Amino acid sequence: MNIRIGEKAKNGLDRLKKAGRYTTLTSCLEDIVWFFERNKITPRDRINQELNEQLFRNSISERRSFEELKEFIKADSLSLRKRFGAIERDYFKNFAEKIDAVYSIVNKIPDDEISGYFRDVDGLFDSRNNMLIKLNEELEKSQLKNRSLEEKIQEYHRCLEAINKAVRLERTTVGNKIFIDLSKEEAEKLFYLTP
Image (cartoon, rainbow, N blue to C red):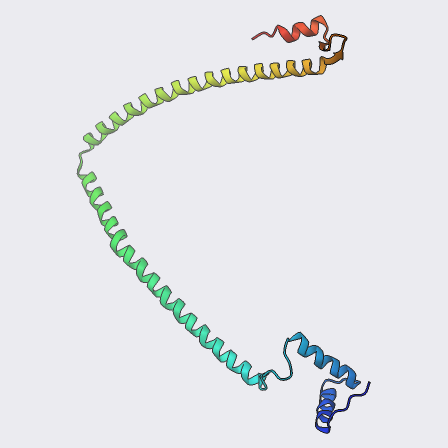
């Protein structure tokens, strides 16, 4: 296919062919068309002619944004440190002073009063220990009862499975009848469960 183009366009295509190291003008034109299609632009669109300058402007803009972000983080960190300093000043130092005041009061109490207080506390612990022992005994009894109930439930379940396996449906002249095919020993095991 022949395409008629002007001298200026021919020179431009030759320059592109040489710069891109194309062997034929056809492959150069195919890549040009593919470039425009892939980037969803047309030759009439305004394309940045000075790419390097635009990249430089973008890098300056990004640096400026990065510096602003660093300043924001620094200011935020400073306000956070001030906030924690205020919390420490308002609460922890006062709290430490209050604890010191409590210790000074406790140190003024005579030792015999403190030992009497702890004797009363020991009696309280003894009564609680007795209550805990009783509660543990009741818990063990209820656990034993639960275990025996679980064993009984398992035995009933086993019996129902045995009956289910032995049941068969037979058609008679009177209608459908259910028969359980068990020997006397098997039936006694099932129906005379010992609690």
